[in-house]
Length: 287
Image (cartoon, rainbow, N blue to C red; front, top):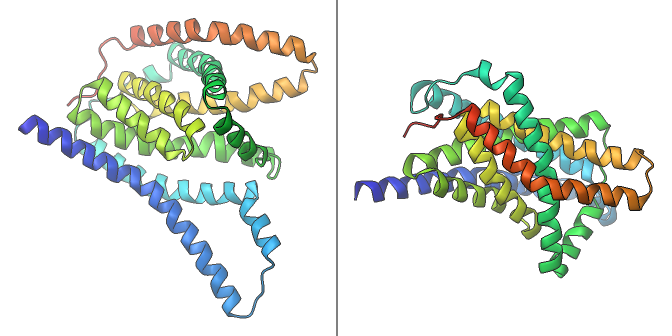
């Protein structure tokens, strides 16, 4: 009974932690609607076209996301910090995490993970063609040039990963890990990470990515280790896209290079995971 209650308790708290960022987005949306209603009530007419353009503007949404992430980092980050100081996590060797060996391994892992995600996306396009078309339409409205490049990179590649790792690894996975062994905790936290992305296509690869992120957190026993991977992954995503656009290579040659990298992605990812397991042979979160 004790073990069963421990599992239920960890699931319950994990659900609460997942609901916090979801409800926060909902509250920000409600607050925005209230402000619009108040402006209209005061006699300030807002053209419907202008309102729809503002709400669909990627830059506007990026700013809202950064505000939500600021609240998450300040609130849940402080909570995590004081829990770590007082309770159930063993000491962290930050010098080892920042060593060239670990940083290089995490960077290589992020590189190969890019192309594993490409494989997952290709499979999703084949299995769910209609859903994938809707996803493509959604992404067509995403213009990363609406803000200065440095601002977009900071919000998406630096700021957002910190908030997500605090919520999903430092809080949700860590909480599930207290009630479960690694694999159930990793899968459940990965599913939570996928649900948070709010659409099927992103949800599937985010769930798989969440399991890998949980593994890195388990091995390094640190928010820093998993953040370095997530930061590298997002930066490489933009970097690879930029290189493809600026390289000026024939489309056929670019496609051939991408296929080669996708073929190497699985073995490369496996080798990097093995190397990480060798660097951190017996590093685990204490129950």
